[in-house]
Image 1 (tube, one colour):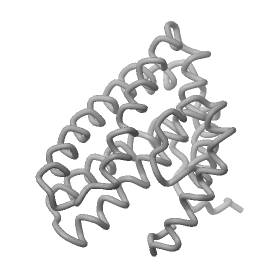
Image 2 (tube, one colour):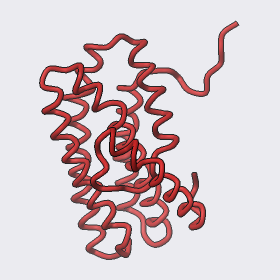
Image 3 (cartoon, one colour):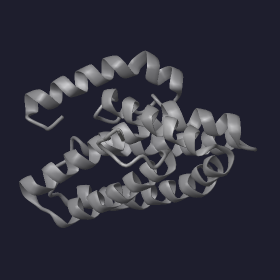
Image 4 (tube, one colour):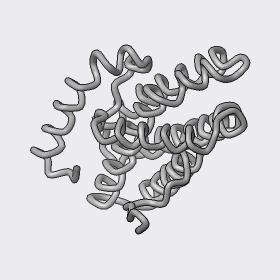
Length: 187
């Protein structure tokens, strides 16, 4: 008898690429919305970006650094981009979502995040797909899903390495998720 799963196993590359598309759509949704709808959309975007980047930092980037030629150099550049994005995202949390400043900074962030995602797909994901077996890609997807389930839901600039995520991540996640619960944001 076949085992039923809650998702179609596709591997880490397809899973993260689909999240990149969802992130792009959330940027557009947030930019088109106003008032409470914009705030709610921004919270969904912020949460997805935070858990997505944490999982990449803990699972994907270390594997890329080990498996791919020039992997360490590629990962170093992506981590710097992620730190910059987290800094902007953290700053936007304290800005009126209907202000021109918020809209301008969110557009800039969208463009930077899209460029970052395209570089990940080109420089990291394609290499992982070429170097790893389907089973390894599926195991990585499961590890990414687990990492996302316990990741912080807010950006924490400066916490981009696997070690920093292990040391600061659980505490940050606990605080973020408690804050989200108090504010009534979905888990």
